[in-house]
Length: 417
Image (cartoon, rainbow, N blue to C red; front, top):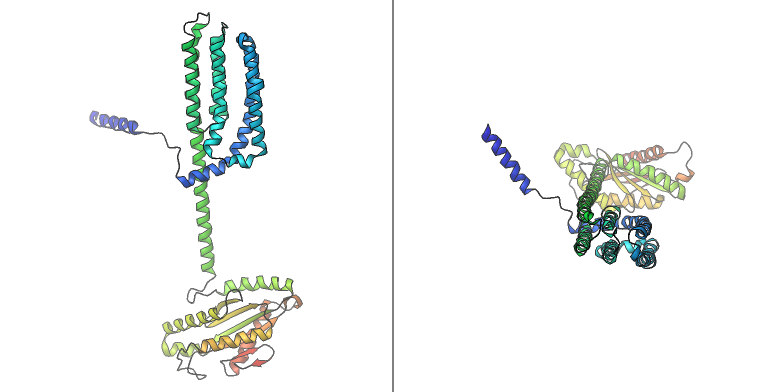
């Protein structure tokens, strides 16, 4: 039992020693996306928080007047007449040229913003070193809000926040070291205040790291969610396409052509154009199956569907399997002469396949019969509809079969092919 506990403790110790903080870096592509996505929002944040920070920075003049009155004129000059005008100009540029600033290289943008905190810290250090006020040592506490400003308010990116915090701590320690030979009643606070600044720097750095890590993780999760959504959308589109496609022939099925007809009916009605519909049937297909077998019949339907699609490109209309050995062709904008010409060409194209059909009393090869119907949806009466158009084409198809097959016939007059 003791040996197991010892092994478990050793394992936990080794695992702890191997632990490393999560990386803030992403791959080059995601890093570029992250910076582009965050750019405008960060510039807006810098401007808003910068205005607040500038106000607080100048309110410290009240502290300067009480704690370091001997260098107050220099503090006033630096805060109001040098730092503030430059900071205001930067903020105005950020407001006016937000888009341009957001597209700047990250080192330029982040580095420039970091330098505002560095300048504020160095300025405070300069005042500490040049002041002989007995309260000057306590003035070190002013580095605390500067540290919070950079690491939590402006939220510099972690590597910049780390450099900024290092400068703040170096300034603090330099001031403590430089004032070591001075005798003041409040010298006892020098080391505790330096320790306070260091603790605040460590705490705020840890929070800064955590904030940036969570921001990057949210962005990665968002990218993954978008990618998953795109994959699901693509899968849904593929499934929808499969549900609208005949599995045997590969051409659209009845469900697709029904939706296509409704769409074209509304569009052509608004444009006052014609709509032609061709309903066709493979002649003596049952006899073909009986003679050659169902696998050969399936191959026959595939060949017929292929030649129909080749003869009617997608930009001209829609070819679909209507059911069994029946096919349908929708020709938006086609008048009767054009529709009949297409029907005749389809009859000829199927014959030219040269698929032997010894069981056909019509001819020795596979052929089709076509019924053609044309309508103007804009002038259609309430009794006219897509169903009535299909019924007219079906009646024309029946007459084509009755007339000897291997031909096309219109709903109004027969035309031999």
